[in-house]
Amino acid sequence: MAESVVLDAVDLHILRLLQNDARTTYRELAAEVGVAPSTCLDRVARLRRTGVVLGHQLRLDPAKLGRGLEALLLVQVRPHRRELIGPFVDRIRALPESRALFHLTGPDDYLVHVAVADPSDLQRLVLDEFTSRREVARVETRLIFQQWDCGPLMPPGAGASLSAV
Image (tube, rainbow, N blue to C red; front, side, top):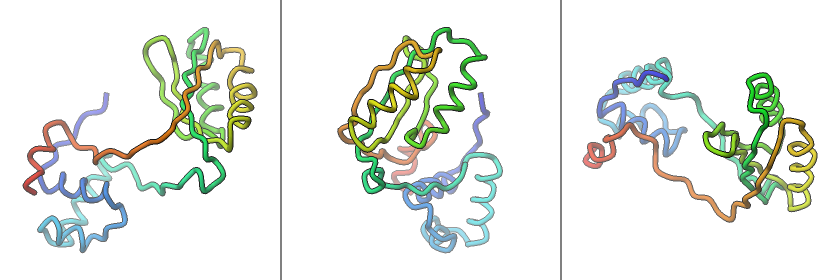
């Protein structure tokens, strides 16, 4: 398990602001947080170097790209052995429909978030890319009606201490 990094109130404030808008300039961040721009730059560089900040991502609207139907696939792999898991994970991650892949505990081994054009495209994906694989024992499909983003990710207990920042 990865070791946590010690973060102070300035670091947490920077992280909250960047999670709300990763395009915020260092000058804007510094002014909002109350530090010099050079200090802000050093702080963000340290957050990247220590692996707290993993990168920047561009979010796209799947519907505007012709993938207006999203689903969660619960996948059971049998036998659940390492030599089967690697190729399975590589294949699922390479599919253009795959948005996220989670390895789970419990009766299902994987949860796959997919975005497809329509129900027939989802059926094709499940039949051709999942149930056709020898190691896939079962697939359950859950359609996503709507999804919401939640607040920025902060360390446990940081929410209350930042309300005044």
